[in-house]
Length: 194
Image (cartoon, rainbow, N blue to C red; front, side):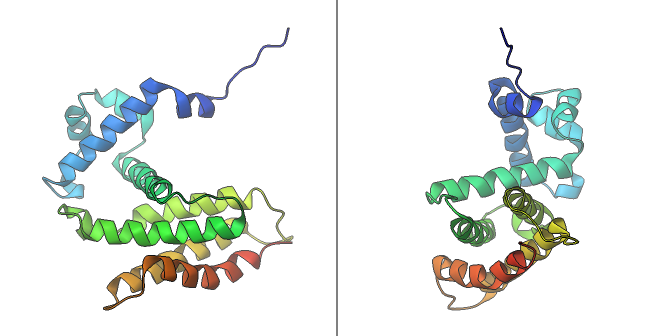
């Protein structure tokens, strides 16, 4: 009889204890961000606010920046899910990610916390790059093309366009901007496809 063994990643994605601890750490960071600057928050303070010990923090994240990135990625995916966007094909995924970036920036700007003062590119760019890496893994790339570099260029282009959109008075809707971003970023990503 064959035995099925789950990978560590699959267990992490479904184990309620792991999910609960990560959620508690993210909630603690959000609470602390409403009280003080990110640079002034220690790992110990995050662990204490989450009612977890410091060792538990380090089981999940190497540092507070990794926690911030994970929190951003989770919030970003929640925004995409809230809009009911699906990744049925590459075009749908690209538009959904662009809309997610627009939503993320506009909602974060409206936050009454010091999140609005943080350099958001440090947390949102890695989340978008990860989504592009995930998508690129499903396609064959041209020889000598660095698909990670393409993903980075596309992520920065998407973030930059969305940030400019947010700063534009009388701007178009997020949906319309997502279409414009898709049209600009798609050629970057397609330049590496076979």
